[in-house]
Image (tube, rainbow, N blue to C red):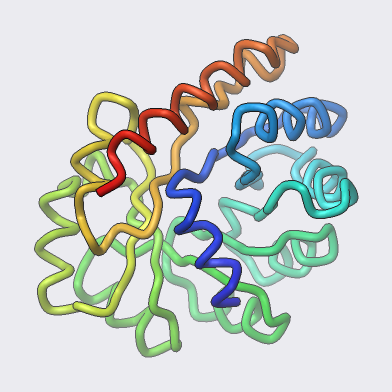
Amino acid sequence: MTEVLDRLAAHRLVPVVVLDEARDAGPLADALVAGGLPVAEVTFRTAAAADAIRAIADRGGDVLVGAGTVVTPAQVDEAVAAGARYLVSPGTSRAVVERAQEHGVAVLPGAVTATEVQAALELGLGTVKFFPAGTSGGSAAIAALAAPFSGVRFVPTGGVGPGNLDQYLALPAVAAVGGSWMVPRDRVRAGDLDGVRSLVADAVALATRLRP
C-alpha cells in the first residue's frame, strides 16, 4: 500500500476521471501515457466505472489505476475486483476504510477538519484526500492542519487547477494534487484524446516547473 501511495506522490498529479462509456477507457489511458502521466482515478459516478477500471487494469500495469468516489464497502469490493490499485473516498468512513484494509488496498479517505484527520489516523492511515479543497480553506487550511498533524500527507482535490496549483504543491504536506482539468469529461466523451493528451502534457510540465 505504501508503494502505491509513493508512486502517486512521485507523479504529483492524479487525474480524476469520469467515464460515461467503458470503451473510452483504453484511448484515455493511451492519452495519459502519451502525456507523461500514467495515473488515473476513475470515479464511481457512472455505471461504467468498474468496467473502465478493469479495461485499464488489464493493459498490464502501464497506468496506475484507482477508483474514486468510493462510498460503500460494496463499491470497495467492486473496485478491487476490477483491478483498482488504490481507492479514494470523499469522506472518512470506517466501513469503507476497513474493507479496503481487508483487501490490502491503499485508501485515501476525505478529511478537511482536525476531527476527520484524527479519525483517519486512528484507522491507521497517514494520507488523506483534502476535498473539496477550494471551498474548505484551500492551501491555507492544509498548512494549518499540517502543524498539529506533522506526519500526515494530503491530496487536495476539488477547485484545483493551473491557476492555483503552485499554492498546493509548495506545501511539504501535500503528497499530490488531484484534478479533472486535464481530463475534461466532455473531451473524453467526444473522443478528443489528442486534446486530452495536450492538457495532460501541459499539467505535467507545470508540475515539473513547480518542483522544489
